[in-house]
Amino acid sequence: MELLIEHLSKTYPNGTKALNDVSLRIEPGMFGLLGPNGAGKSSLMRTISTLQEADSGSIQLGDIDVLRQPERVRQVLGYLPQEFGVYPKVTAAELLEHFAVLKGISNKSERRQVVDALLQQTNLYNVRNKNLGGYSGGMKQRFGIAQALLGNPRLIIVDEPTAGLDPTERNRFHNLLAEIGEDRIVILSTHIVSDVSDLCRQFAIINKGQVLYTGDPLRAIEEMRGQIWRRTIRKDELDSYQQQFSVISSRLFAGQTIIHVHSLAQPGNGFEGIEPTLEDVYFARIHAAEQVATQTVNG
Ligand SMILES: Nc1ncnc2c1ncn2[C@@H]1O[C@H](COP(=O)(O)OP(=O)(O)OP(=O)(O)O)[C@@H](O)[C@H]1O
Image 1: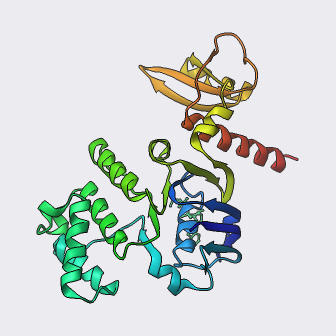
Image 2: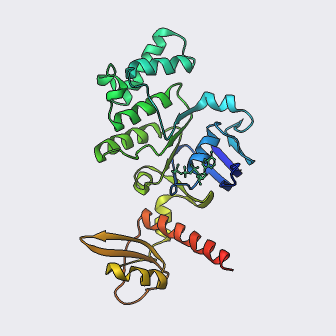
Image 3: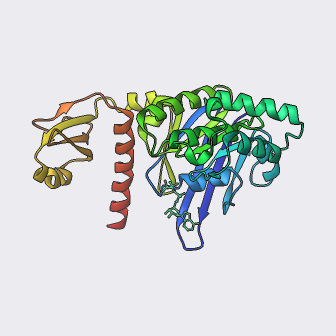
């Protein structure tokens, strides 16, 4: 089963163009949707999840026409929204049981089995009788995955799931995602580049409602080899470097400013060529798109 998105566009009533002719082909496995805040990731996730409509375009999931057959999509979809609220005074076992009823698992002993298995899989079995209000961020997110897995969905959508998790919880959550992404489509929407480089064999970069790149992370890095240059500068030099070069990122390290520049040729004295990372790919693509946008505005 594959997910085929073609020419999808959406403008909100206030005039915000959240999706601008988005086309993507997504195969089974983990797919990373990477973009800054406001890029349109949630709008795309909500549209695929049948929670909102598009103005134009189409989405096909296997033989399901997603925009026209929402009830069929819901039967094969698991969704972990960005803001996943839980009832604080209910235990994980109780709430998952409740979701299982809603999902249509009507046989009581079957339901019990499914719920227990999911609690085991998400490593929450030992704390299943604790109130969700006492769960840590990572435990809540794992509970979110447990409910998304009910009914054995073919398509799972998780919207910015690792924001706010500490490194250990994030690692554990990554392992869980990698496990569930083995035999179905899992779309992971995130602004955290390492979520994608750790987990995804396919990804897309989206910015201002447009797809800037789609492909394989390793290939994307390969394509940028020989084009990323690093230099340590003083903080007060940053402006002038930004005017002279394609500075795609700058960060402080031990009180000094380190910049990465995207350039086909050696930019000049003091620049050292480095192995690109997916973060460089991401920033270079976004930077290039911004440059084009500025040039268009300035004529
Ligand atoms: N219901 C809405 N009405 C009007 N504008 C909206 C609505 N929902 C989102 N937007 C705007 O559409 C654009 C895309 O938002 P969206 O939430 O899809 O982006 P995102 O990539 O998920 O960002 P974030 O990570 O901040 O959620 C933003 O400019 C946002 O302000």
